[in-house]
Image (cartoon, rainbow, N blue to C red; front, side, top):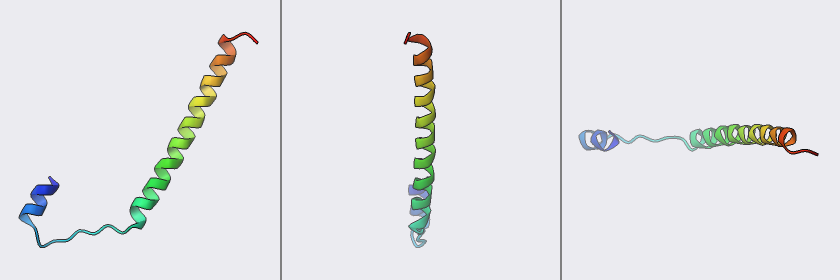
Length: 53
């Protein structure tokens, strides 16, 4: 798709500001961190239920 667009419109230059990928990467990393913490909390709770103290 992108190669075809570049083939048919070689004179157009698309530029993405550097802030856009930076902001998206920050948001995705925060979401992944929260998901990891939640998964670890669930695993630890399940471990406490199955493993006798």
